[in-house]
Length: 117
Image (cartoon, rainbow, N blue to C red; front, side, top):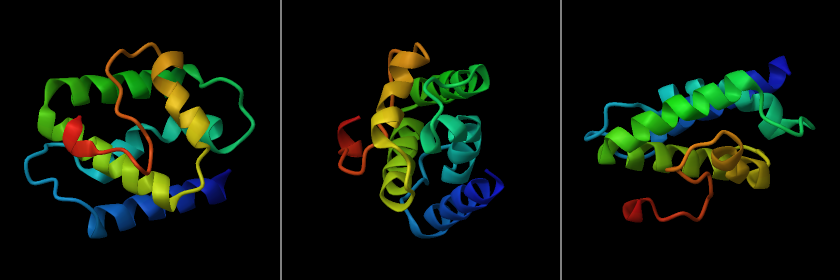
């Protein structure tokens, strides 16, 4: 799984350097991706449910997204770019809000319109 982590971190770095305008947000894409690294086993492998640390990370990120429209859009744009660049299981990613009991989720979807979030 170490190779996956390095690939995931590299994609996050590329997204941070190349992607989106996060000037109005406090959270950076690399921070958002780093927060959900505990979900790597669920998103990239055969784990059928997210781990407790994964759900804790999702809940923390959801609190950040709920507190600020700028952060919500930044997180959305970040995950949108990551979803296009990284071979995550999108079906599993879209289940994270439900499985981790968050009510206001930022979709991980390469086609989401982040301006409407």
